[in-house]
Image (cartoon, rainbow, N blue to C red; front, side):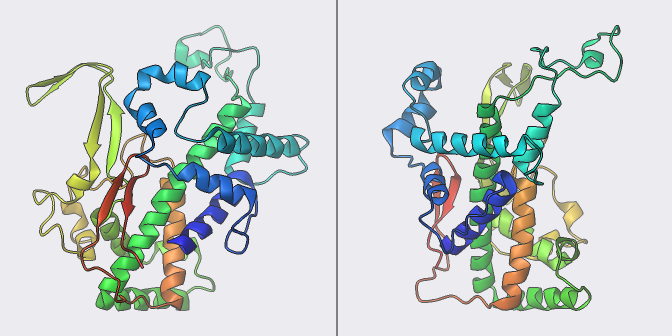
Length: 338
């Protein structure tokens, strides 16, 4: 998991902040140290418990710099974001990354508008239909967006790759089948690009079954936008709700023999039989996981390359039944992976 984590950290640093940190060979760099500090959220920490259990005290917590993340780590990434934005203002250091997209969006805003309103959607017919009034992001908001991408993409990807390795090691026949399909795809393509990887049907099936059995996140939350009654239970507008992804993925009403690892569930012949809300590894709807596309891109390309080069086998420490430890922040942490 450590090697996967370092690789993902490098990918996110480059794609979100435009930085090359090489955490495999330079594990003590300031970026790596502060990133680990951000990711190390201990649910036994009184500070973390207070933030989760007493959200109504948020103004007090903010005043005293009490939060899920350490003030020192947040300040470091704010400084990194500010420095990166300053380098890009003159256009000499533009890159194709998340921070650049956010910076470009900020540059195009109308500073005279504080409403963030789009006139034609708000019914303002006097203004030109192409006129859009936007409220720009502050540098703190830019940092927050980049960090959300970082936090959402890192843990889901690391857990997914670790569980894929476990599934490969404990299912040698399926590992061999996947290897053959990857090799076949590699023989018909000059490079095993993301587009080529996306065409490997069995890789998609193997990945989906891993995400079903070992979802990176076990819970997701939503807020009711209107009063609604479901099964004679009234939910009022503004009520916060959690839905249990892990239980859905292991529900025998939705899945035959749910504890069995079977990629054929997601074959072309069977995938249409799956209820659309029975498989939610990244949530669903417009507010699904912001790191989903990044995670899938990294997972698929990494899995294809790793299976080409290595064979996974269980060792004396490998446990047939994987233990799942639930975590307040990252939702799921898979233990006993060697």
